[in-house]
Length: 326
Image 1 (tube, rainbow, N blue to C red):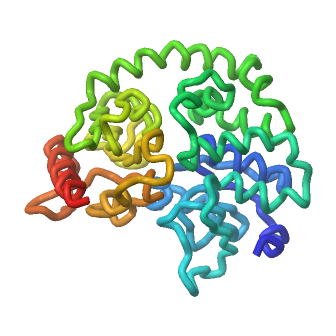
Image 2 (image 1 turned 135 degrees about the vertical axis):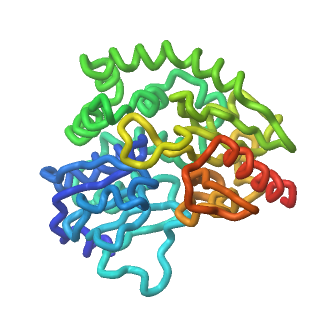
């Protein structure tokens, strides 16, 4: 399948906007150097907002598979292909700590990727839940590279192109484009710690973080590093109540689910995709890291109307009931 992929005429790469997605695209650009890069989010892709960018000359990476793309590279459990599921797409999927690792293995025998070996170790740790608390709280350059990525400021694409051309992580962080954003992100870290602490509560060893309408996003590492061993997993609610995909500066209110991988180093105690897909059929990811949209609920079922603040409570109530049955 890898040989078939390498023969494709890829002219565009649609990839996730996180560290794994950026590094994956940087690796692919070493084989397809002229390919345009479009950053997206799983929800945007599923909502059809990226359709205009996807055709048989497109590689979709670290995102749900699109039936019109030419190449799909992914490692998420919910995107595992079934027999007869290709629809003309070259699918490279496997259980891997990161999509970047799949792209690296695919191209390592074709182009020189030796400068990315150390970076890939950290991408695997961060995306695959293999990082420990001390590493996450450390000052390691790749930790900060992941935090500083910001597609709206053009930094994600700048970092991607630098990695494509073999620039080291240390040099990227100190260049004139990234360094000011890095200093701003460092300054914001303590503020984010405070916001998370003020809006987190624990129910039955499940930490719940309410960040909706706050223009703040966080991840499971950040939350569980702060909560510590008092939780086995967490739910992070973020985004804007009443927003829809495509609204500039706003994002539909959503939930992200994470196992406390600092405590459960070999996998969580509950398949969190069960929560992510309970009301949102487009939800998913990994058993230990996944997400979905908050859905409008009435009489225990999803309905088509704008999401209201009360719907967050209704979703959480059902998820807590499911969690209690673990």
